[in-house]
Amino acid sequence: MPGQSVSGDDWAVLDAGGDVVLLGVIDGLGHGADAAAAAHRAHQVLSCNPTEPLDELITLCHRALLGTRGAAITLVRLDVAAGSLSWLGVGNVAAILIGVSATGSAAPRASGLSVGGIVGYRLPPGQQPATVPLEVGDLLVLASDGIADRHLTESGVAGPVDRIAGDLLDRYAKASDDAVVLLARYRGVRR
Image 1 (tube, rainbow, N blue to C red):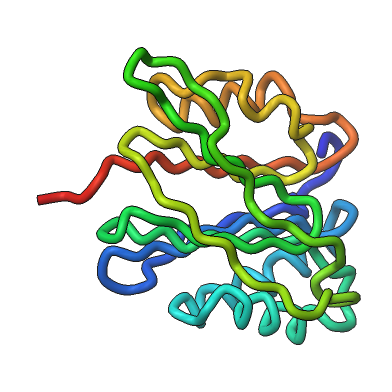
Image 2 (image 1 turned 180 degrees about the vertical axis):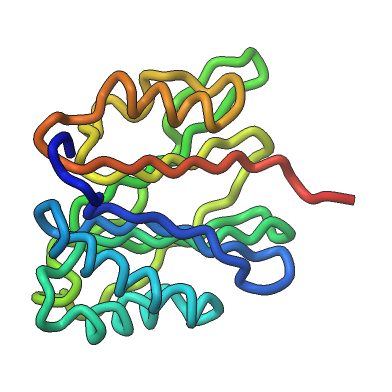
């Protein structure tokens, strides 16, 4: 957020063994140092436990964030070999899977499951990840609420993911909040 020296939003891309990657976006409530401290603590939990199931990771983050501002967190386990992803979120971190047709047109194929609550304050019971199949060329978009959901598909899916992420941040980041965007493109199984 303009005027702040640290961001209360964070992201993680972690090796979860074999062809599996754990991705996450963490939005510490509010902004500034207290939000950054909560986001950093959640990032540490993810870094130390990347192979744990997503629901267990949310629970571990919840325990670690008790007494902090708390956070909204969305996690994705991307299994490259299986061609699928599983996702789970608490709070308002968006997750959208955008597919590309044979003609090159793009459209959202699925949205991540996110339930209301605050990790570190009020964790909803019984959360379970949803799993969706991946198709070559799919683009996964994770974003904190520093970017309005309605803008997450407006930069297109062509080109390098760093350019798409930069475009989303440059064009749609709110001046009143921290913002983070994490993108991943599924290229299929490497041989």
